[in-house]
Amino acid sequence: MISHDQLIHAIEQETVLTHGVDFLVAHPLGKDGKQCGDAYLFRWINKEVPQPDIELMKTRYHECHCDTFAQKVAREKRDFLLAQTDWTQNPDVPALVKEKFTAYRQALRDLTSQTGFPTSIDWPVSPQ
Image (cartoon, rainbow, N blue to C red):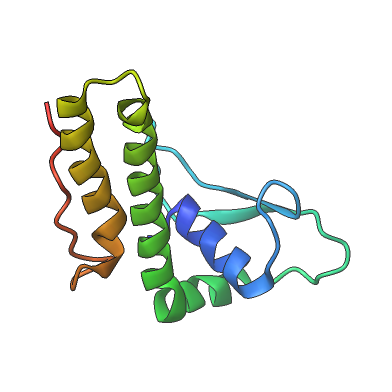
């Protein structure tokens, strides 16, 4: 099954267009509210670029874009975790707190240099 975000990623990588502006992707939902089948192209909005073959986009995702999607997801999570700790670097934060979080934040920034990135990531634990 190809997820909503995976299909969007494949189309954006292959066409350099933007979801929500140039095209819309949707997916079926089960009774539990979770995706229960392949994502599909709901609407092609762009008038200049021809609509791609979605089966080809699914194939291209699995052939070419799995790693770039995994990198994107990992970076989004890392950026979210960094943003949640931005406050720790303010001038009025005690030095001890700032030091603990400085090391944690640096470990987050260094994720992309880990040997297993993006498929096997050793996520640092946030200080308490």
